[in-house]
Length: 309
Image 1 (cartoon, one colour):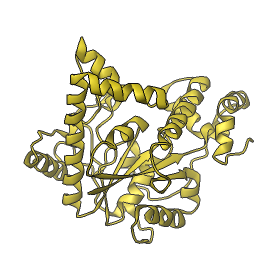
Image 2: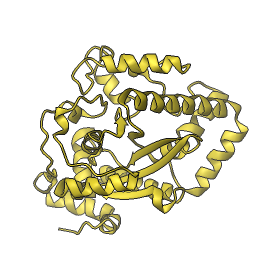
Image 3: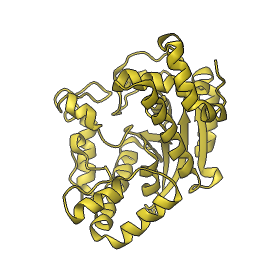
Image 4: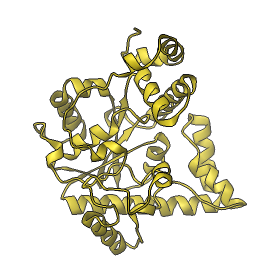
């Protein structure tokens, strides 16, 4: 069996920080997200995209060893085009298979439809099996290279975790990472160029999708974690996570001093090890924007313990 920890939640919620902190534990191996984001690929090239070790990702010795380890397990692997997304490109019946595999998490009715689709559409079934085999082999390879027993995947999407549950050798635990919906909306507006209404709706949709996924995991396999709590008490919060993962406690170290090979957002290349909650939204958003976002995120925000201004 392979112990797998999966970070689930909306982007801009602190998953990269959490990934770096958890990767400092000797029993946790990770490469961050499983695959370089398509947006990053459109903005750069394999020669320009850097691993967190600051080497061009294809030149990184660690990723070259991953490629060899995957080949030993029967898979061609290129970190730039890792082929780990759940998809089945192509028209016709391939298009139907693609819809089945790509569909976002939206509750039991649509998940039942997905399961039926996987059974009755051969292309969807074949592609799902192929991708799951690649993910399983990657987890084994990275754990072996880093000498760890828990593989951490910070891909965040709920539907990925739902499909990865099908891997018989995986014992999965989910960390649902949440952050104040107003803060996330502010970051989404800045990074994606959308308005407050769309940004807030995105936060609500992703966290509701995570809550829908929760019903498929037993209570001892699910943990809800607030980004703000992690920043306020890193040591205590990490000890809680280690206990959840069945690992011994470990003091918080300078995670930037360790060699890590993580792909994800720009924070992977930062040099600072300071752990401090980013609350710039309080001065960046106008009162009108805050009010609009509050109307959208308020009920769910309060459920996670965030009070209105």
